[in-house]
Length: 439
Image 1 (tube, rainbow, N blue to C red):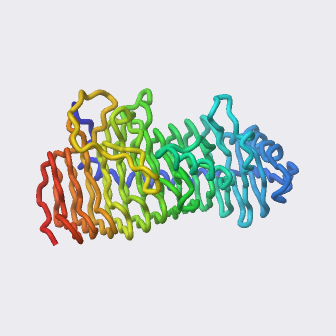
Image 2 (cartoon, rainbow, N blue to C red; image 1 turned 60 degrees about the vertical axis):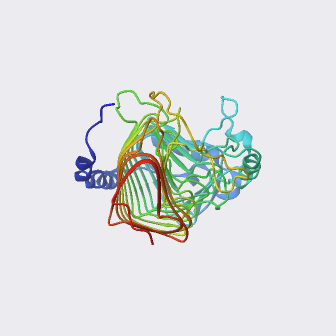
Image 3 (cartoon, rainbow, N blue to C red; image 1 turned 90 degrees about the horizontal axis):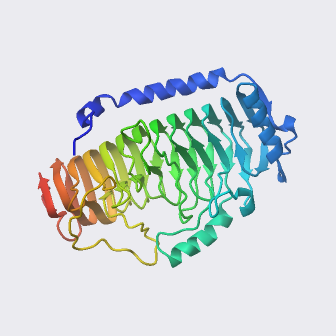
């Protein structure tokens, strides 16, 4: 299969470009908003008891009809059913203001059986801003209980639930200085969006709240996630490409995650849906503490595609298990599942198709990690080896070593895995260079 361009070296030269463009764009969008629509002027009560849905939606509609502006929430708790954003709209929540979702299942029912609409949605919009320092709260607790019960019965399965914020086909999206919390499921899902900035955002959900991903850019281009604090029950960030997008070689590309703190959660993920392809992802200057994974690329036969030109650098991980997960055998497992699906010990090569996972051109450098159980895995398929992974200045201390299987060149440069038991690196059907000495 022909390798796409630009290569990893060219990508490294362009890393700073999306950051500067997106930051400038968000400031420009903010400065253009002049019309202010107070939700209280539309008779929103903000008392936490009265349903303010109609008043808030009237404010959004008036803002859109006027050509844009700010829909403003003063201090108070504004209880609402699902809302629809309009183009060129800034949703601004003052300190002490909370936009609170109802937890009535019927409020979120969609026309499609078994699915739900999000609390805040918008399609084909441009120049949309979410600004704090207030809070958007999804009232997820009622939803999590049956979802967790379902997962305990069937590992990897949780009940369908609404997401908190979903934007589809939007351009110039900015989320800043705001808190998202307690989503029934995923918190922020930009889908097929371009030029998305998420900065200084706090995203919170209890560690055991099922599938409460924080930020899931799906089939997006030019995304910057920076200076965020994320403490949730599932992926801290999950980059997804579940299908091919017309007119694009890669559904997801040019995504940067930097200067973020990941607390509880399942780490910095790509996948498990990668059919549309993911390239040019840069993760830097982030800390991980008590997360179930550190850096993770996860997919499987039937859900895979090309993942290439990925850079992780300047990362610190504390009490993270494991530090590195690159797997083409994703089993939909979490540590809390009562039964763990096991990766097959022996597996014959299968015919490749357009849904075979392909991982190549990955750089992991300047990473320090402590792992109570395992350093991690690099696990390709016999028909699709993970190719060209460089670990440079990587230092992992763990109970057990790094397991590498079905891989092309995996190169260690000034890197070491320190284990309490067993060898630091275990390899099978893999070409490992610069193997670190055992300690």
